[in-house]
Image (cartoon, rainbow over all chains, first blue to last red; front, side, top):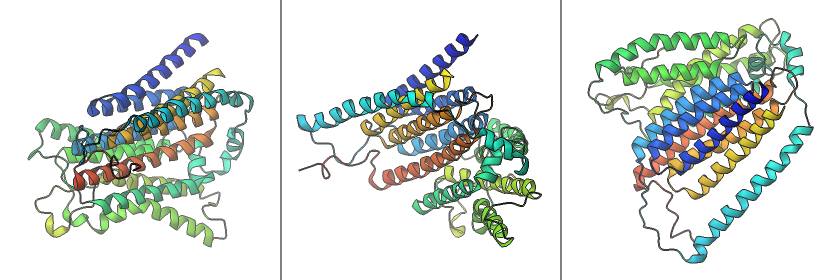
Length: 328
Length: 105
């Protein structure tokens, strides 16, 4: 029995390593991106084998799903060919040799040293699961991962919302969003499918969000699903009203960070450390943060896929908008 | 007990494969893919280190850090692709133009 499990693990690891190698060596970038999505899904399987079900959900939704979408959209704009303005001059023998030696010697030796260091992992064995479980009663949630995420290490999560917002600001400052899809009218199949899937995605993401209180799930996974719903709605030909481009879109994107900062300020004013919730309110505050964060994550991810700031209102008549109607 | 160690080794190999591709491949999107694979390798090492305990439940703290890491690496991917598209729009290149001017003369 144990041998079977070990065999499964070994097959999974071999597949992951060979997929990684194949996708990075593949000539065709479309194939590489598709292999990357498969890699992400298999990685989710590896996370469940390691007992990290929350990470598996996030990997499947964010790592494979949204990253895959971003890569496909990027590939559509860039193209698979390697183009450079200047054709590289034929290099001398030494110039060609140096990177090969660097890569051929340094990377394998670092890998081997690290693999040898794995013995250290075998010796040291201490975790914080005991500490987390003993404090679970005062955290306001029944799931250890949610407790750490939104209570014990809530600062990390606050800063991560900041990173998300910063990424969106960077993308918006680079370019204006172009229409993603050039079809005049989406096919009826796609339209019907998006109508069918949209309510299901909203319900499932709500369920994932609520489930975060006692089982694997939570704001990231729910937000990623919701943004998948928004993208599906864009594919189905829906669009955001131009009146929403300005303040409402920015508020929706920023509200995740905003609610975190407001709660941190409130706890500070109440005489506690920032984000040190009063015990009887902890559950409600965590739920509030998660609901707002889900909406904000969904909007940020969908806007990131659009790849630029929304068009100015005066110039939007002919343009397909970057984000769909708020589905939440 | 041995499975987490094996997964940690797998993470190290994934990291090295990614690092190799990041240095060797020229297309920008391929470099972004390579950086993502490197990140996955680091996450795997981290999760494996947290799964070594004797009990059934894995350590939640590394899981939370990896969750945050997945979102941050998604942000990295989104910004990197936007930058690559911008480079492509401005210069019509899909690689970094390094060959002549920045080489040692």
